[in-house]
Length: 493
Image (cartoon, rainbow, N blue to C red; front, side, top):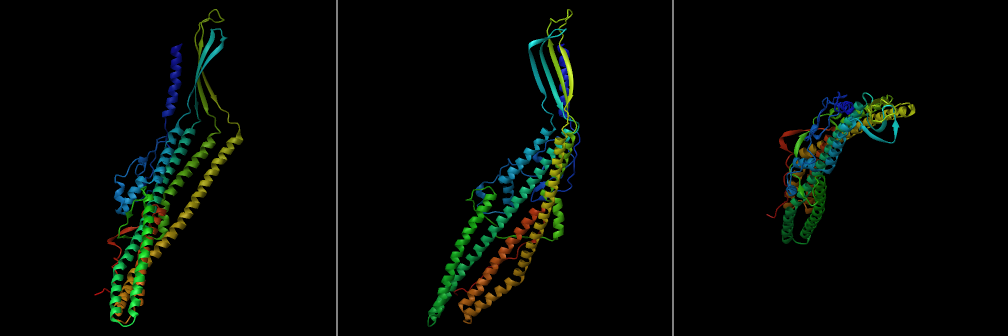
């Protein structure tokens, strides 16, 4: 009797294990695109077996457990933009949180694929039930619920697509952080350039003061003293400007350190030269490229597939689930019949639930369909927003790019020539000091404006790359922007 009981129990357990290990072909939707930006990639999906656990190795990004090998002190001083981006990808808390969230959703896939836990129950009879074969003294039952065909498959698809969408949004977060690092870096570059341009003026102004004093000593009256006082006031104003710019530089460094997950006291500095890159694509091409490469779009397409699977899950609930049970009864030796044998009893039962409450089932289908429609509308709204943003950023890029071209080819050469002529006239006595300072202030303003448009142009490119989802420029072979030569005021010689 015990042998038969053991064989029957082993048969039911084998069925359960077989269900746990089974895996059918998933309803795989191919993602033909490959989104890549500065080392961030969402790998195109391949048909995978349902129930296979997703891991970070399916996506090309740095593991959140990886630590940056460089000590933080290495970021004090001039650093390259590429090294800052690499450090941010490995250490930014927002990126790490998104990666862990995606992994947590990936862990739901085997949960959704699994069968419910089997139920094991033991019964002891307080009052024995007398039978012809003998009294029933105890009973043990083992039951397992099997969802209707396809339910577990669809539920695992829901978890799978939800996980893939989360991994795509990891890439979106990385793009956002890279954009923030670049914008903060070019803010720092502009402030540094403004500081440098103002400091360049201090020595020439001191020379001008010496020239003005020399003129005052050789002239009659007090006209020369006026030039000396104006030059001294100009030098004091320059020192005030440097104080404000130095504080602005510290603020820009603190913002950049925050994105890098470094202490606020870290003092990174931008490189003095900005390498040129060309954007030779039309705005229509960029919008079309975003449809393929933007991780947010990839995520929404995976969510639409998830919602479709959720609708199918709700429709399968109209079909009953099957529960199989095995029961063993321990029978005593003394029964009512004179031929009682005391053999233990076995029974095998099959049951189903009855999905008769149609209003609940209909409501579940309607809920899943409404969620699918809401996701589709959000996807359409996000696509419209990205298109508007790409067109706006492209217009900003063209504005700063064309302004830079005019500044470097027309405005700067003419302003420098004007300063040269005014300087000669001042030395010859044909121009006063105020005219000289006006010309120099104008040139200084254009030089700072040139750096500002360089920074704004690169920031527009950084935002465009985040909106499109991939790099949109190509480097220029000849190196950096046109050189900005030092300004010269008349010396004391």
